[in-house]
Structure formats: C-alpha cells, structure tokens
Amino acid sequence: MGANRCLSSLLVVSPASSAVPQAATPAGAAALERLRCWPGEHRLAVGLSGGVDSSLTAALLVEAGWQVEGLTLWLMSGKGACCAEGLVDAAGICEQLGVPHHVVDFREHFQEQIVDFLVQGYGDGVTPLPCSRCNREVKFGPMLDWAAKERGIERIATGHYARVRHADDSFNGRHQLLRGLDSRKDQSYFLYDLPQDVLGRLVFPLGELTKADTRLEAARHGLRTATKPESQDLCLADHHGSMKAFLDAYLPPRAGEIVLADGTVVGEHDGIEHFTIGQRKGLGVAWSEPLHVVRLDAAMNRVVVAPRAEAARCDCTVGAVNWVSLAPPQEPIAVEVQVRYRSGAVAAQLTPLPATEADHAAGRPHRCRLEFAEEQFSITPGQAAVFYAGDRVLGGGLIQRDPAA
Image (cartoon, rainbow, N blue to C red):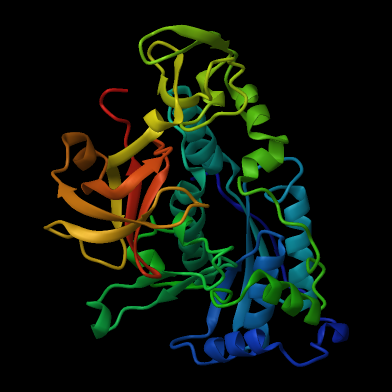
C-alpha cells in the first residue's frame, strides 16, 4: 500500500447557515445522547463515502460535540459512489459541517485486494463476497492505520447499520458486534471478519436508527445528500453498470457446456463466472422441469444443473473463520447461521474442525462444520456463513467448495 497517499486536506469554516434549525427526532436524540456519553476521547475520523448514511454519521458526531475529520478512500477512477461523485459529495458535506476532509488514494490497493480477488474467484467457479473482504483488507484496518499515523486519531466512525459493544468483564474481554436494529438495513453480515483490535476502535452512530430515521435526520441537518439515492449493494456493479459488465471487462468469453449431474448436455454457456449456485433464470435451457445450478466445474468449464431438490444441502464446511463475540469453541455449539445477506438466520450445530496446513499458512487457522436443522437451498462456495446468538455476531467464515465439486 506504499502507493497510497493523501491527495487533499481541506479545512474550511462552517457557514452560519449550517446551524441545525430544529429539534432532533426521537431516534436522533437518542443517538446524540449515546455519542455524548461515549467513553474516552471524543475525537475521530469519519469514513465518508458521499452517501447519506456516512454524511449523517459525521453530522451527528459534530452536533454531539466530537472533534471530527472526514476521511474518504479513493477506490476507483470514473463515475459512481467510490469515484468522482462520491468524492465531491463527501467534500461538500465536510465543507458544510466545517471539518477537515482528507482523500486518500487506495486505488492500487483496492485493485489488488478486491478486483483481482473477485476476478480470480469467479474464474475458479466460486462466488466471492467482496464486501466483507473490503471491510477487513481495504476499509477499516487500513483506514485506522492511516488515521493514526497521519492524524494521530485512534478511532473511526462509519455509517454502517450495526452496533458494537466494547469489552468489559461481562463479555470476557471481547468486543461485541451486534446487528443493527433496522433488520432491513442490518450490515453485520458484512462486518463479521473484523478483528478485535479493529472492533475496539469503531463507532457506529446509526446502529439504532432506521433508514427512515436517517433520511429525516439528514433533512433536519440540511445535508446535500439527504435525498441521494442508494447505490447498488456492490460498488463494482454500480461502477460498471452491472456485474456482468464488470466480469466481461476482465474475463474473456469461455464457451462451455451446461450439463446434468450424469453428464447429459442440455445447453451451452459463455463463461461459468456468469452463474451462481441456485440460479434458475437465464440458463437458456428448456427441460421438463425447472433446473437450478448446483455446481460450477471450473476444471471442465461446465455448469452443472439439476431440479431444485438437488440444490438443497443439510451441511457445509466453513473456512477462514473469524471469531468475534466468542472465543474459538473447542466443542460443538448451537448457533443461528445466515448464509446469504438477504436470508434469515437458521438453526445449526457448529462443530470445530482441525485446521489444514493451508489454513495455518494463510494465518486463518479456524474452520468448522455446520449441520443445519433444516435443508438449505443455494449454499454457495465463496459466500459467508455468519454465526449469531440472537443479535450478537459470534463469528463467521467462508463457505468451502464441496470436495465432490
């Protein structure tokens, strides 16, 4: 990350018109009270993407009396939330709030850690989860490192819909990650991989707000982003227009066969990267019953399809596990598991497994086996399985490819 550099550092005086004109909503008032009572030094950097969530995060912290500096990571060139549009809106918010704004060039690091990672994963027949990797490898850890080194700041805040409880005796000395109270916006699924030393330095002011609360509070502050539309869940898809367009830009078409489990050819495809486990639409296959993708065979460049029942599984192996609110267990435990961002949590038994040599070499020595109480559809290698106890994130890891695949 040696190429990362601070591109600009702007300190502007807050205009008189930036004063908040009316009382906070009940949710906003509660958030302000939590921030005013937060233990420790009230100085931090706010990760600003140029969207309404991070904008309000900065505004609430300023209103609560914190010393705030804005920090925007420049991840990609061009249009979109991570590019010129996001940089302009983030700078405008900092100007309105009267706080410094720093832009740090992370484009090379983002290319290496996220773009190259995605391209390799899709080419290998898995469906990678870039957001959790980006949070660990690009955003939170590196952002904290930059803030500490360049600005002497030890904490950061972001606009994520999640909650953090810092360590005390009741939590066995571990920082806790919890779901955001707005179940429709909860982002804890993408934050499971943050290590303890990072969690201990985070503030999530929006964790107990709904998206509607955020819009109302942003309007109360007169923020330029108050009505800004949300971007797609995946910034790269937003940047390129679609996920297919992104993949087409990096992976040349590779014609192959669509087959049944017994090898019967039922269709053709132009690249396994355009398919994911459980997919039914867009296969271009006419059959006596609906077919779903059940396996992506990268070695043979084949998409394997079957009736829906054959896409259901009752167990899976999870690797690269990060334990968050719980120390690594030594015995089987009962958990609730979420295997996709938009899915609900389901009951399962988690059994710790011995780490492989590759696990140790990668510095990720924890893995486990999950046995679900009920069959699950579309268990997808490369996606995350996140373990919960109610709202508390116990840990999580990446679903591994079945040896038969």
